[in-house]
Length: 392
Image 1 (cartoon, rainbow, N blue to C red):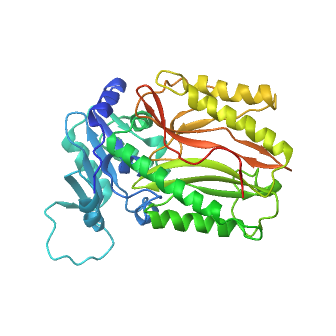
Image 2: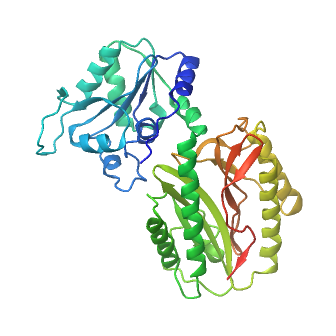
Image 3: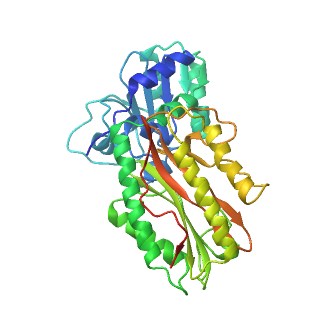
């Protein structure tokens, strides 16, 4: 196992920019990001995520010290197994566990008292919390603890979002492995599609292959077939049967050890109608323009304009999209967003999903989406699958 120690210097620089000397992570995604404890819903066992309001984890990052983890006593073994953080602050749990040795730590009565003491020990002046990313209950509990200590805090969610944009070498390794798994698994599912199968059967093949290849989980797995389900971007794969000449849209993700990827491909089971071929060729060219122009320094909004304007010019003058891509990593949608209003400039180390979707009821759902890594001289396209409209 290669534990991830995030780039603490870069995070602390971001803290300094907004004037805080203590950063508190309360959301599962950011606790995982700082500590690597499996508290996210994509982990193989999502129990820690499911009990996050009753047995929460917190991670403290002081400006002038190492991080601290606050967690329930029942999670000691999982913390020792996964996290690189050594400073542990533990509170009592309702779970009865018999251990051979006693804790070498003080155990607090509950997580509020543990939080209060940890904050007192650090004596911070300006505190930032990822309020916008955590649950209402935990945000209120933290705010109440700080009120009791006569301390103020500000929302520091953007510190995490900005920090997570740039991946280190281990995070990039996991991103590449997630893509290797998803490429192989999607090829397997596509190779087994046949008339008469259901969307659910195809999805199950895909998921089974991902787990077999070492995936931890996924953010989403959309399998959408035909002229009604295909354009439904939130389609729930079910018993809809694949028919001759159906367009099948795959918009799928894979998470490997906490870091995910997100790709899309479109398949025709039979012969694609002329309108579908014309549309898809335009989307494929628009996707190629995204890949050709993505490089360090370009603004996300400028990439957006390149892709959207091409589809408007060549096919549909009313075409619009909220985005034609996004950062991906700890979450399905990380920063930046390749949208009209995001002026973030691409930087080396970003992991992106670039996509050009088009959904038309009566015809089908279409998408081409590729995983890329921004590098010094452009991008590395990580997705290995062919981009053309596949006919099976």
